[in-house]
Length: 147
Image 1 (spheres, one colour):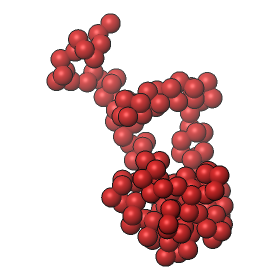
Image 2 (image 1 turned 60 degrees about the vertical axis):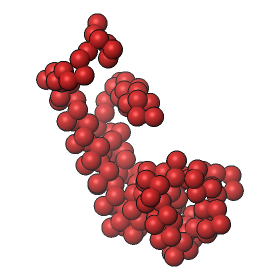
Image 3 (image 1 turned 30 degrees about the horizontal axis):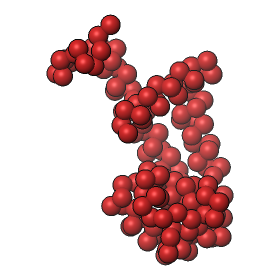
Image 4 (image 1 turned 90 degrees about the vertical axis):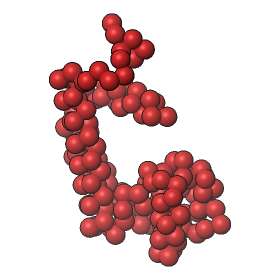
C-alpha cells in the first residue's frame, strides 16, 4: 500500500479521489452557505455569530477569554473581534471576557431549531445510518490532519 511518505508530492489524484475531493468541497460550501443564509433570513445571525453563541452557551459561566473563543469558533481570529463587537451592539454578549447575555441566550435558543433542521436536512439525513460512523471517522481524520 502506498503511503504519504512513498508518494511523490505532485502525483495527481486518481479519479475516485478527485470525486471525493470535489464532493467534499461542494457539500461543505453549499451546506455552510445554506445554513448561514437560513440563520440570517430567520434570525439575523450569521453562522459564525451562531457558533460564537453556541461556544459561549456551552461554558459553565457562559463566558470565555477572547483567545479561547477564537480557537473554538468557526471564524478567524481577525474576524472574531468584528463579530463580537457586532454581537455586543445587539446586547447578545458583553465584552470583558466574551460573555453570553440573557438576550444572546434567547437569540441562540430562537435560532437553534432553524440550525438543527438545516444540519439534519443537509448533512445528517442524506447519509445512510450505516454510513454515518464511517463518514464521521473520515471527517474527523481530515480535521485531525488540519490540526
